[in-house]
Image (cartoon, rainbow, N blue to C red; front, side, top):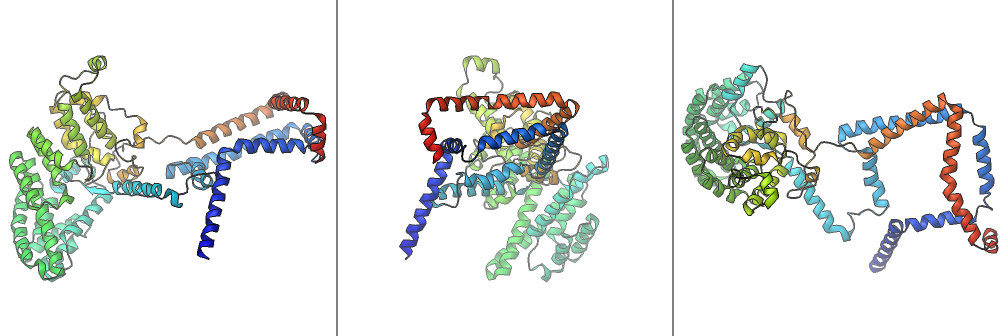
Length: 552
């Protein structure tokens, strides 16, 4: 029975595929067969009489009818245009096009992702979708500034808030994830800090941190004060050193007890996150205070001590510090380790690789000379590296070339988005300026063609970046959008149809007789080729054959 059912299902699938194939490739034959059938049956169906009746009815219509007809058509097409425009502004696509692709295309021979024959294709599409969704994830900015010493000073001077509520809410979630655990209620200071990280009011958080320090030397309390209360980098560094002393003690104690149960393991994981965060921020303070070599050593030691904690992206901090030292060989060594196909890319990785390739040729590169003699191997490598970087994040060149003003980078970024471009250019613009001719070479890539949207070196550019960037970046910043949304065909079509029918309605109302003559002339011209073909067919085929066919 199962085999019979399987055979019946296979036959139905074959029949369906044959019908789909016939509609896909033989539509013209079907069309001509239908025309021939209608022509053969014109006498029994009294088509000529019906056409003459219709023509008489049309001749009796007054111009007011045509005005009403064209006016109604213009109104309907205008309503469709308004709906299409609203749908496009809200969802970024055409409603008619989406319905056509989703519902009509499978009926007319589109790809059926559920069929076994297309299982590989379906899996590939789902993998691409998963990649797109993952790359639209918001990431912690590895070079984020200090709230008290940098963001708040900007607010005091300009009166503007550089951080959005969405961005600060994400930071609060990160702090709760990294700096708290289930056993915090057993320690009074940690219990206070657990509530402090959830507090929205900055002054309430700072007060809670001081309250926790009165009970115990709490590393997370020092972190909060260094981030939000310290008004200078020197003060922040001093507080982070105190946090480091407290954090190392907690880390050593929890390291000895981590195998005694799940609670101890969770506490050790929390203490590890706290220690890594403190050391990374201490290195960033050292870098900001000009002690770059010391900062590089601290970052290298941290990466050796905790090689598996890649979520902090410490290598991006290291790359920026090495570029400041102009240690390009060390930069290349770091890129060789992290610019791997299995690791997630970033603007820092792609543009730093492009900068190193451009550095080798930029001082002598000339577009005119290259067009005459062709590109050398080094120049080709530099061009390909810049092409790769710009394809990954096309917003960066506007900031590196100073075609758009920079703002303070947010605490979170969206890879391939405007927020990542701001964060990269804010710290790396000086490194590009230091390499002679690098910006001139990049200048030729400032206008990226739209085919890059399809994704040659990376997956297609995600469409979710604009919405997320508007949440991450302050309202006074004009978000860079790529690719620019082009109007769909159906919006242009309905706009043209609405304008054309409105014009016909106006002309028919103003010049009814002239438009009537024009309409008759247009229809007679339109049907002239069909009448000519029918006359030729009647002259070629024998009259007896036509008589027999009409009798049938």
